[in-house]
Image (cartoon, rainbow, N blue to C red):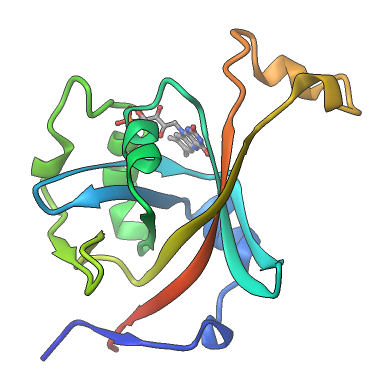
Length: 170
Ligand SMILES: Cc1cc2nc3c(=O)[nH]c(=O)nc-3n(C[C@H](O)[C@H](O)[C@H](O)COP(=O)(O)O)c2cc1C
């Protein structure tokens, strides 16, 4: 028996602001042989180009950035509160210095499309990259935003079509 069932995106029964901004998410790219993941709390879900999409914002120095660049797919995994310490760890350590593939408490699984998600997740979105762009400081309309970039490491935004949505079986 599998741990997850595929659901239609329309059946996602969560508040996106809480899910991303408060609970946080894990962005993962690569395949079971080589992948990396990082915690993120900035992003979104919505509708664009008649597709249901998720958006991630990844600073260029992240190791995960290299994996998202190299791969057509990325996954977004959401967890119960019990996994907060693991998300904190994956949001402070870099895969450049620790092997995140050996993270205790996380069991990697491969999707039908060979992307990686985690058995412990409660909800997983598998996304196919559609578009990227880099934040352009010339376009800030609020002076406070640039203060979030003291070293001018402007995020790259990735817009991904949500091609699979997996929910943990209850
Ligand atoms: C709660 C939280 C939210 C974060 N959100 C983001 C984000 O949206 N974008 C980003 O580039 N980094 C974000 N980070 C920082 C990365 O997770 C962190 O730099 C991580 O160590 C990168 O790992 P990597 O080098 O293995 O990719 C966040 C960290 C935490 C703890």
